[in-house]
Image (cartoon, rainbow, N blue to C red; front, side):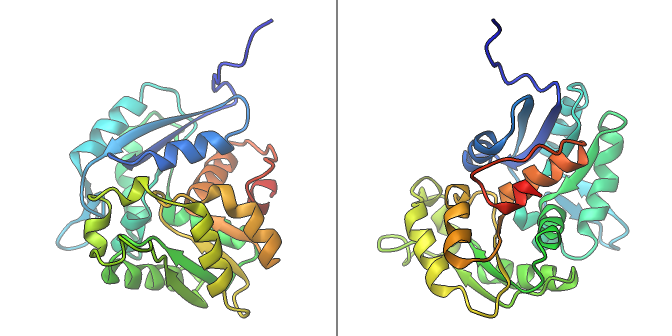
Length: 262
């Protein structure tokens, strides 16, 4: 008898993630269905990971993006996503499409390229969410929060309200830009996040979007949906779902929110 070895004969999915984060891979592997494998390329660069040219005629990829594309090109992947919410949000309107155009020639023919911004927009629309309650990680500064609100409004899903997660005593006195460097990414507690989303989610929001691929949360998506009686989408859940669908994989996945049943 052959034991399960996670060989991706059904689909192999590539994700570009922040170089010092562990959350995206952990969450994708938790949710991924059998016979689908997940492969990460790490990026150390400021958002957005592909820089707009001065005349905004297109974007130029950072070196880590080029390197990752060249490595992925040999791996017979089905789909690749830029798993970085901040790049889509700060890049703004048109950035996703420009980045896909720049990356596609660097990959094997037939590989579908997407971004976390497009993944979350597709997930919101598939979940019939039009006015989400947007929940943001504590390391998003005011500029990134404002960019996020504008990004989703530009894509037809204007947030009803938003909330930047309070990381609690010992963390809240640090500036957003200092949190990750001080270890906040590895000190996340999903129970506290559950309580804040439950407390702050307004009646008028028709669903929840938890942005940020480094924001640990997929373990509470199902519980939040049951408690709020509304669909809940997260960044990593949306990217996995979108990459699966773009790869032609339509396997329902239990335990991680209604989106993965769509």
